[in-house]
Length: 430
Image (cartoon, rainbow, N blue to C red):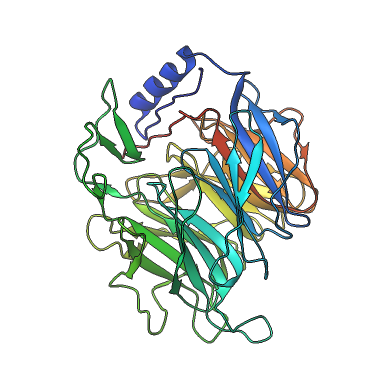
């Protein structure tokens, strides 16, 4: 099936080979990927197919689908593209587990509780084994009686369902959480036949994998905006790949909940596919802060000398293309997407051609479909729509997709994309 199996790398030569392999397989209904838009007002999820030639969104039959939540705050998809996790908002502290059918339809499975209230963000480690949900208030606290927040850690079963959660307390206002790709224990290669792909950075060529499936040094970062006298900070943790538990890095103090400075009002975060760099948006200063990750040693963060980088007004979302070449930031107040080239040698961001891509009003979330890696979409909260742009793999420039904008349910708070087909695989090799 065409685009069912696309192996993508950060190296141009291998990437070209991967796309070439993808286009010679058979193709299902000319749908390269699926895009899901989550409504904050009623919990509905609009589902669309992505036309592989144009990027136009075609609503899936039966859409919108109910998440069984009243006011979701965000959503995230499993790395294998088979499950969508819709995260509740405010006191609706649940995760709606929704299976993604081969036709793009959604099937609600369960709504397990998180271990706190007012969830804000979610991340899945690159092994697809654990879901991390950041929330604002631990038990006994609320907006009228503010207090510390935390992270709920869910094991993810092979069928996408969630196991019994554990909890970790963090600072006073966790607003974003990201997981870095793990470091491989052996040099990755691209063989003619791959028996097992365990993560974006590791290939296991035999069934005799270690308990950690061949990798080590996987990190999770929580961006804590802080509402007390303490300054916003990034808390770093080493992930235990056996049980998902998090251990503070040497640069993170869990007594004072302080780590690496994160500007004035951080809002979103992203890690590049190689796991070398972390980027955090600041919605008050209209900037992106960049950090180098000591991935081979401690996982601690070092601010980039070239950081920060200017954005549009009120940046609230950030994503990096699957090749690791370009960074895109959604700016809520100016209804634009800022685009940057990413220098992998030092992490610096440079303005891409045509960097002032315009959306409809109030973009809240941004995604790039992982099948082809050339179509970008934003959820536009104030216009009940999705904006679409096609990015140039050579320059990163965004060009509006025909027929954009695409209507959704009211107040779309987030947009997520997955590749079409259960065997679709995105692989990034540094």
